[in-house]
Length: 84
Image 1 (cartoon, rainbow, N blue to C red):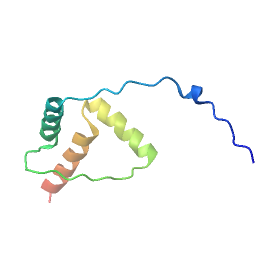
Image 2: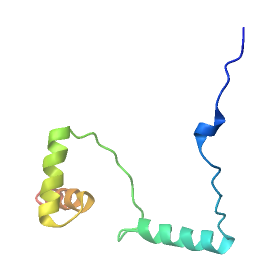
Image 3: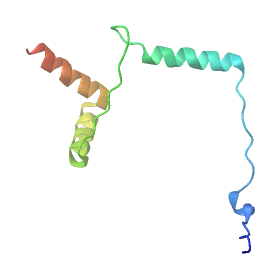
Image 4: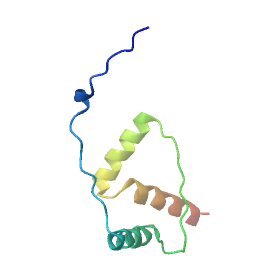
């Protein structure tokens, strides 16, 4: 059985890899740690599946409030927990 010829020219030109210096990696890590720190100590990540129509409505609401989905959801949770 004959081998199929593959045209590697379609892959495009080789791209140069940009290597980071150790100092920039340390600075990047510090920035990431600052982002993930919260008022109460640590944070936990949760993932939820949202129906597409509800997600679209939520995005429009968040846009009108000029906030983020994260802040919107955290505010709703906080209000609910404080109402008990």
